[in-house]
Amino acid sequence: MNTDGTELNGDWDLDPTHTRIGFSARHAMVTTVRGSFNDISGSFHADLDEMSNSTAQVTLKVASVDTRNQQRDDHLRSADFFEVERWPDITFTSTQIEEVGDNAYLVQGDLTIRDVTRQISIPLELIGVQKDAFGNLRAGFEGARRVNRRDFGLEWNQPLDAGGLLVSEKISLEFEISAVKRADEGQQQNG
Image (tube, rainbow, N blue to C red; front, side, top):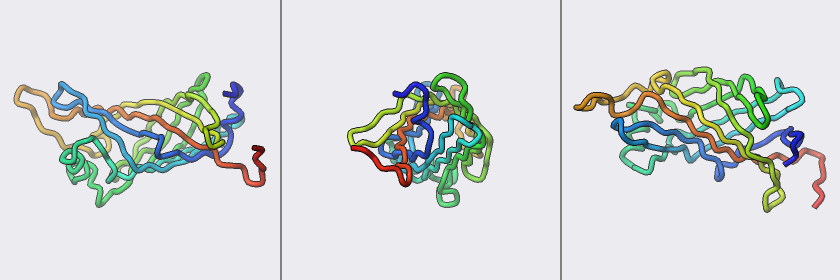
């Protein structure tokens, strides 16, 4: 990887087949349920010389939610949670991206779930930048962020007989991002 970061400058598209945007939540106060969204699209523009020019946007198709349990996935798609027919997308649009350390970034922006938009900050670590087997420049990022699902109108829950709730209110968002750099227009690739 080029340690000065200049190869990160430019326009990038998320590779949905190698990107995981997921979540985890406590279930019945004793176990963790993990899930992800299988239909992801997004892009970002990186300008490490002038970070205020850097932007990012991501869209998750809610119907693609996958927790490896059809009944639970159907419940998440229902009006109790995401109400996919009314709000088919979860979106994130950056408002500011900061370089906060070596290979460390803080991406702030508007997260919209259902009809609720909240400002959140997502810490991301640049794992590396490499040419893949097809000659594409690929960048990898990882990060996590906890949110309160009730802040986004995801209110459904069920009390447990022994006390507590069936589904935790705090949800961990998990980001494993693979992005491919767009070829610069007019630039010839040497092979």
